[in-house]
Image (cartoon, rainbow, N blue to C red; front, top):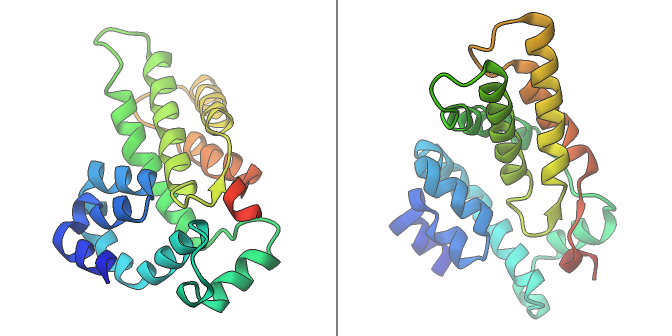
Length: 187
């Protein structure tokens, strides 16, 4: 009940995620206001699973972790990737790519702005993909996929006025491709 109370009190800034030790998820909420408020609505339905996950990691007694959640963890060799995660990765990739491009100084070469945008897209994908403390994949590999695809598309297609779809898709597909359970879930 504490997590639900924190969702209602400070949902847009991720208080419920901080309480459940989902720091990356809380960071996403802090930087976007809970995905501009829409994420808080989704969390109303996802919060029971987040609580199960936190209790599972803490080694809580069986009555605090649903049997369905426990079976999902034990039978899967790799974390599930849902369609909602794919779309969230695209949204946050775009958001962080815009922030990354904004870091390029005025008058810098176009490739620098593109590379910073691609790194931002990679960071956005990684944050969403690893928001659960039970999943992991490589940040540097995700960013590398995005940067290579972005610079290649800029060289082939010209431009450099925005983050290319190819760079974002490379981050969304390439990074999570290596997704695995983090150590607490493997016990």
